[in-house]
Length: 267
Image (cartoon, rainbow, N blue to C red; front, side, top):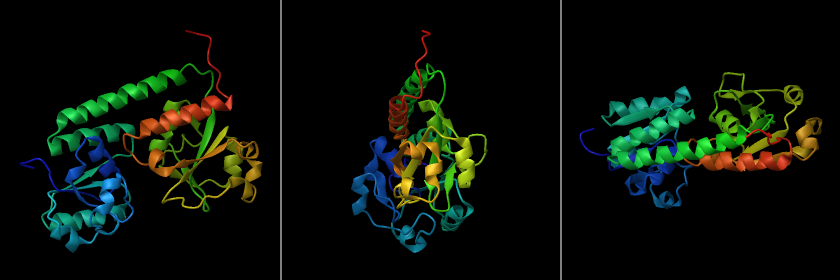
């Protein structure tokens, strides 16, 4: 681009939160149907869903930058259609903390606010390192199962950003060894993992998880039986934004209250 982006449309909501964190939310000119954060964007035109944006409506708004996250193949199909219309579209890979840092820095360059982007990334790195150092003193890592969806149970796999959040906070993802973003375990696999803590995200992917105690056979999972489960906001844990720091802090507090991790006597 030969000038800083001033009219931005994000096809993935996390970008709106990043742009707001950089103090530039006034550059956002539209939103997808599901996106309501930051609250100021709710008054903006809705251009469809992130999978199926209305191409004609997008064109009518004259954006100078459209951003999308690498994900399912279907999500990239409208990207190609928009590029064929001559629009400037950038696709990021924010499926890891490192990818999130890279996206923040590149967005900063595209908007002409590199200094603020660098400061934000530096601040995040400092906060995350402090969280990691606290968990390094624990003698063992509590095992955690992170429920992405129920029914048709879906959990976080080893390449999911949630797995990094769990590891930094001091836990161990039950399915960290599965090098996929999502895993599809049966109830027996979760019971065998024997998590110390069972986390249930609530949001667009898991709208009505309900009380896991009431689910068939879920009391066979020790964490459920002992009441060591929590419902957590999907947007905090599964959406790659600067708010992942808050997710780590909240999870570390949960783990410390469990009485499972013990602080080492070593200095």
